[in-house]
Length: 115
Length: 115
Picture 1 (cartoon, rainbow over the protein chains, first blue to last red):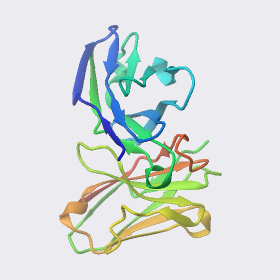
Picture 2: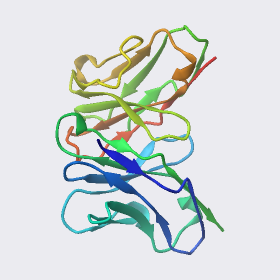
Picture 3: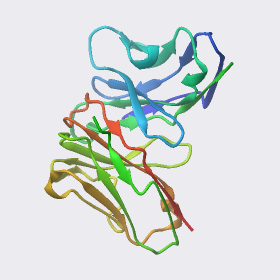
Picture 4: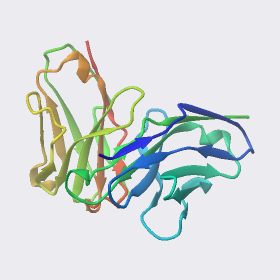
């Protein structure tokens, strides 16, 4: 069965410092990996995805993520955090085939960027 | 381009009452999803439509939940009767195609409170 783990409920970082939000996954086939961000009282917004190819994926608002197959991880990163990055971040995974052809979300990580 | 529209944004009802949620996806998006997001959790898929056809409703509690997508555009999700445990945010999303590698675009959600 597919699953996603976001081991940190909350990540605190000072503005200007680099940030990392961790995600590990489990699927039976090739994974398709996504990051979404949720601001208060708003729907989820797509940030980036990994389908195939280059392990480093660049997305919106300066975010990037690195796919690591051996560690089954897809951590979200940004070189310099902004206060406006404070939000709830969700990692999600899908794969091809039957009942697994759906997006499975992690429980979310709250990112708090202090000025 | 207009995003996914959902209404109402908030709904408070007493248990055993019926409730309905409406979703208008992004124009041209053939695939529509309904998710439920419990507090502190990631969204969980309830049902997925490809045009008018429900292609994955395995997580929909069919004894009390129903959904329809007439004419392959707007969709309605209904709960009858509502239970206390149905309190959650109900999210609608759409994508241009239903493949596992396509990003989904989410609406702002309907926050349901069952008293």
